[in-house]
Length: 627
Image (cartoon, rainbow, N blue to C red):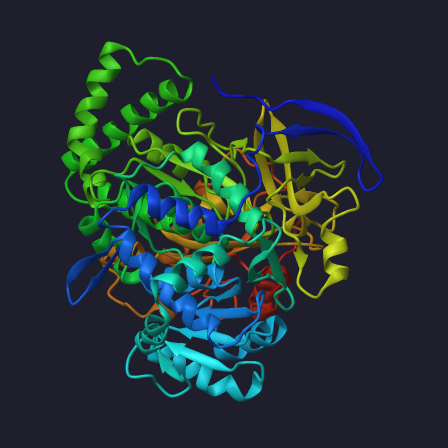
C-alpha cells in the first residue's frame, strides 16, 4: 500500500502558515563519485554502455569505462587545474559524454553541460559566466561553433575534440588526451587517484547547469554531489532498475531529467545504457536496442500517440472497427487496473484479444520488452498517459525542476494516479502557499544560482523553501500541477485561465502538432495552432484537394473548417471563458532554432507573443464579442 506522507502545521515568515507534506525519510548524504565506484565494483558487466558505430552496436564494460574515466581524469589533473574548476561539455548523447562527466567528478572539478542545439552566440554567456577553463566538444559541427566564439571566451585554455583529427577550434583529440592520461596511469597513481576522488564531500559543487529559461539570460544552477546523490537514491527506490535492464538514452544529457535519471540513476542501478544515434533515429533504435526502460519528455509521447491514432484510424473499415473496439476494451481495463480491482473474466478475455490484435504491434515498435516508461520535463496530457497504461505499457509521470535535481515527486509503478505527478520521493518536503504556488525543500534543492545572490534570495526564502513557480495542490499524498504561475492567463475581465491543460488536450488530436494559448490582459483567449502536416495532407488528398502548398492550404476554406472543428472538438467540458474564441493556423513548427522553444522544448510565450504579434492582433481586431 502506498505511503501517504506525514503532514504537520508550520509557519514561516516568507509564506505564512501552511501544511507541510513529507516523503519517506532520506538516506545519509553521499557523493556521485561514491555512486560511480560502487556501481563499477558491484555490477562489473560486459555492457555498462552501448553505442552504434558503422552499423553495429558495441559495448563498453564497467572495467573499460573505469579505465577510460581514470585516464581522462588524470590528464585533467595534469593540466594543473584546481579542484572546483569548471569544465564544459558540448556534445550529443554518447559514451564520451559519460566519460568526460565522470572524469570531471573524479578529478574534483565541476562540469558545465551545454545543449548541442544551442547556437554559438548563446554559448558565450554560459562559458564566460561559468569561467570554464577546459571544454569537451563532440563533432566538427560543434567545434565550428567554438572556433567562431573562442576569441570571446578568454578563460578557455584547452578544447578537446571527440572526433579525429582535431577540427579547427580544438587543441587535441579525446584519444590523444586519454593517451596522455595513460602515460600517467601507474598502479600507484591509480590508487592515489581513487583515494583522492573519494575525498569529494557531499556539499562540493558537482555541476553548473544553465537553465534554458523562458525569459532573460540563463542562470547557472549550482548542484552539489549530495543534491544529485539524494535524488538518485530517492528515485532508485521508486523505479527499481535491475542489472538486466537496458535503457535507450536520447533526451539531451545536458537536461537535468536525463542527467539524473538516464545517466546517474540507471548507472547506479546496474542498467545498460544505450545511446541513440540521434533524435531522428529513435524509432529505429528502439527496435534494435529493445529497451526495458525509457525516459522522455511529453513531446515524444505526444508524437507517438498521434502516429498510433492516425495509423489505427486509417485503412479499411474492418481495421478501424477492430482498433476502436480495442481502444474501448483497453480503456475499460485501465479503469479497473487504476482502481486496483481485478478485471472480470469477460473483460480479461476481451483485453487479451485486444492485446494480440492491436497493442502487441504497438509494443513491438517500442522494442517489445518495455517494462516502464517515465515522463517528465513538462505536463503530460492525462489522455495520453491513460492510453499507454491501457495499452499495457507502464507510463509514470513525475515532476521536478533543474533547481531540485530534479525529481520532487513521481507516480509509483504499482500506484499510478493519472492526472497527478505522483507521491513525494524520499527526503522531499512540499507545501502549497496561499496563492497556490508549490514550495519545496530538502537535500535535492540547489545550493543557489551561480554568482547571483539576488536571484537565489528570490527563489529560496530564509526557511530554505524553494519557490517553484508552479501552481498545484496535494490530494491524498499525490501532487497535482495546474500550470506555471507566470503562464496563468488573466483576461481583461479578470478570468484566470491555466493554458497548459488546454494545450495538452488539443495536441492529442491527430491533426494538431503544436498549440499555444494567448490572452493575458486581453478580452478573451485565442490559440495558435500548427497542424500535423502528415495527417492533414493525407486528409486533403482524400478530399480531392490537389494543392500541397502549405501556405495556400491554410487559407483553404475546407482545411480551415476541418482544423477548427478538430481543435474545438478537444475543448468539450471547458468553461466558456476558458475556451479559445479564435484560432490562427501557422505553417511552421515552433523550434529551438527559431527561438520559440527552450532546449528542453518548453514554450517561450513571450517570444511567441512578440514574433506573431501581427497574427494575434488580427484575431482581436476582427472581433466584436468577447468576455
